[in-house]
Image 1 (cartoon, rainbow, N blue to C red):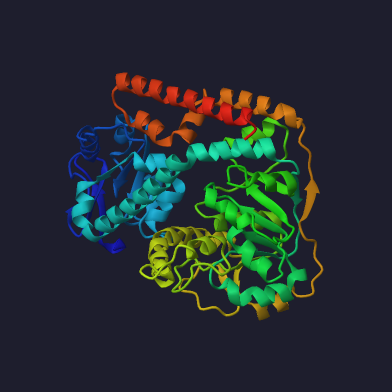
Image 2 (cartoon, rainbow, N blue to C red):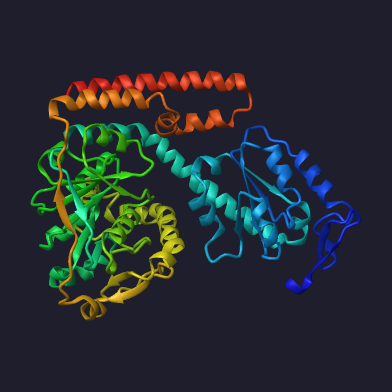
Length: 499
């Protein structure tokens, strides 16, 4: 393709170019053409970001920025012949990257900005590169649909997550933090491949530090394997079932402050509090003087656990049970706390096979999103991270992350005496009887901030940002602030009741 791009001077003296004799810019005045393009754009909302599909020499860039001065402006490139003009944009995404364009957009741009984005064709590029143009639009659509789903989840759960954070801070008794080591860490998820690795996890247990995501806790315990750490980040009430079951092994619970967990566990167990760097829950823990560690927000606990393990050791990290694909039978290694409950509802016309088949199809989309995250970040992790199994035949690879079996593990890690991460007991500076007062004071202060409104009422906040009418913006702002006041009152009631 490179030999087919021809650059020449326009009549006005500016550089123009053509592909196979078809001009990507005006032969006469490409700068004026770019200005007219920006002026011709109409939008019935105020976009937070603007995408231009293959703007070539980018004469429109400064005019797009002037037209949408409050938006971030990006170029989506079909080829790499115009990189000299990339600096004119707030960012550039390449369609021919090893990482799918949809994943580049989804991981770089917030859900709010993707939902409120405006995408436009540079007309000449659409005509000259029709296949690339269609592919780019499909990738943009995929990214926006992902963002819509994530924002919908946040909107549905946001108030529950904040209340979970308040309960967490008010009931926590035994906080700990973790000190970094250099031993191997095995992170166990509950994919079907975990089952065949259980005997090896037990056999080599002394050779590694074991982190279990919450759904893997029960099958590990059932086989007499005690994790050093069990990690949970799920804010839904069902998440409690993975943590609170009879005959659970003694372990440290590494919990996101916004996750759902029983008050008994918070009161009796050693808890490593985790907070997202951008989360409101940090403020509550700081208000009571409770130590915590930062973790990375992720669509799946498996991704959060990988990031945390990677920072917790300078040694290797092994991922066990990380299938990241639908299974033909049970989606999780058994026993599973939720499966036990679901099985009670099976009957002749809607039996176990019907239910697990439906689960396979319903989980496919979310697992594809999680898998894309691992693949797109695999180059960063690949030097020290491996997927570990008993020669399990996975449906998908995890990008650059290499596969290891237990023979490889025995050779690399067996018998090595390395320093495992260790736990350090912490203290909470504020006495129990004073906590509610401190937490309510912090909540009341936070509720006046834009960050609070954006976190707790994400859809309402987004609609305000999209609104073109200043009068309607003010009206919607008053409505959302009243919602915030009502929410704070509801929090005051359950904290004052000791709930």
